Every structure is written in structure tokens, then in C-alpha cells.
Image (cartoon, rainbow, N blue to C red; front, side, top):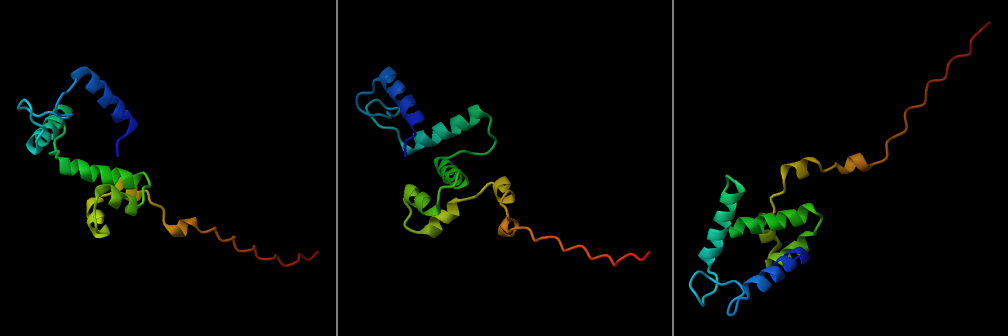
Length: 127
């Protein structure tokens, strides 16, 4: 899944860098970016952002799945996007934000409110 915004950024980068062999070149000339290179990029990005928790490609995958769920994407679609065979594997990825869980309304709150009980009739007043 490639966002239009990211595609624009990649096109601008491609025009500026004009890579010849690899779209994402590695440190060694003529080689592609490696797994450790991507991990290093995540670590560097986390440091530059001032994040205290470690950031890995795997944690970005978790965040992607969680954001999809919070924006209303159904679990089956998330399963397909992540490439999982089992829905239980996808379910392990989805750690919803506490604020999202706490903001969920109970289905009972969606029921119509009962009418208030009728006021008791007053006995007739005598002269």
C-alpha cells in the first residue's frame, strides 16, 4: 500500500538522486539496502525524533496495523495487507490505544431511553 503523499516524495527523491542500479541503494556502491541498513535508519529516525522507546521495522508494522484498525479498517483487510494466513496472527499485532478502547460506547448506551414513569394522578380536591 503506497500513499499518494509518499509517492510524491519518492518521485521527488528519484528525480534528485537519479539512482541507476537500485531504488534504495545500500552503503556499499552497487548494492541494495540491507536489513541492518533499514534497522539503522529506524534507530536513527527515533533518535532524531527524540523518541525514548526503540523503533524497529517490526514496531512500524504494529503501528501500521493499529492505525488501520483505529481508522475503521476491518480485520480481514488488515490481515491481507500484512500477509498473514491466520486471523489470530493479525490479532496479535493489534494493540489498540487505551484512549480508543476507553472511548468505545457500550451497545446498551445505543438503546432508546425508556419513557419516564407517568406521574401519579392526584386525588380530586374537595371544596
